[in-house]
Image (cartoon, rainbow, N blue to C red; front, side, top):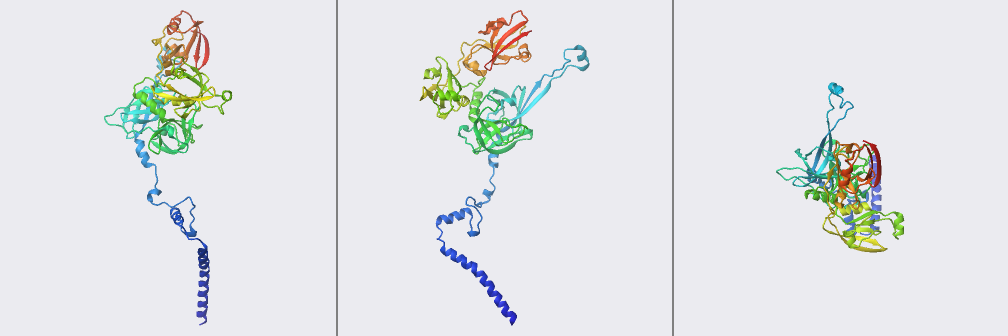
Length: 495
């Protein structure tokens, strides 16, 4: 009987303990306002279930399995087939200290040429087999092969290449159309946009990495003369050169070109050539041009320094200062004058000379461009016709012969078109080296395409025929002056 009473007391105590929190909870609920519709929807979206919910206000549980399995796989399946591997090979001449010696050649033989090869990536941009890659992937190559993602291999032909842009266009052929990646608008990119980099790093096979756009309009990275690169943290390694940088719409927005690394591997700083430049270059190749022609405005530009900006009353150094204007050229006809500053082109800001060069190169010859200009302290807009660079009085290219340091060099008189082809300022005049035979005295003495010969043995060189005549002189002493990259080089030698 006593045990039964103790059991009843214990049960009553437990019930009392259970009722106290319930009473407190009921009292708290009575003091709370009734939840509105917005509160209910918010709780549902956030996955909140009363006071015990731990999810923050910016989190929610997935609504379904599809949200748990978000993936780049559909995008990769769409674009990866258009990314190819590029194999370039060349035969390098091996040299030996015993070459030319009959005694040692009899025992050791003549040195044999050896093959060199490079591996990179490329992107199919036209179903007929047009491939865009980097210039440095195919530079000096004797043979270039392209392997597609499905395992087929093709011999290719180089349609166009440009070292200053580090771009090259190849052509492969098949009886069926090739998969392609549509070229997007790189000017629409913003820092933070998601991107994929697809290529063949280290020759291990096609690889895809993801990242974001870290910066746009990067310059002075030491890859090429172009001053307009996209920076990304998507892993880019050796072998990725020429591969695709793709946005979330499956469009090509850049050609992977370089990495910044001291170890040779990716550290999250990679660079790509913008797709707008790639489109213009590919169009030039498909049009059959022998080099990438940039529109000609008949003006040269230089950087705006802080001192120049202050003297012109500008708030900061920006834009491109007009340094010279060709008489009767498109810029002169529009009213552009030396000392003016170009601030925008077709409504897009021009921060530097490199930015102006890039935006000019992406425009079509034969169109008009709207230049926003600061002239004499006043802002104005000028419409300038973009023309093909003039040929000038086109003279035949002469290959120099005879016993001279110039033997084996092909020379011609400069015109704006030839100057552009050689990467020179279009206002440079004189006689320039157009090409150099690989095994010639001119190559041995270090002459390069783009060298402007100013003087030889005291005679000013203003015509190609004059240089040809001087190179025939019967002398062993040579004194000449050459302009290279804006610098004057003087040489005296016995040959």
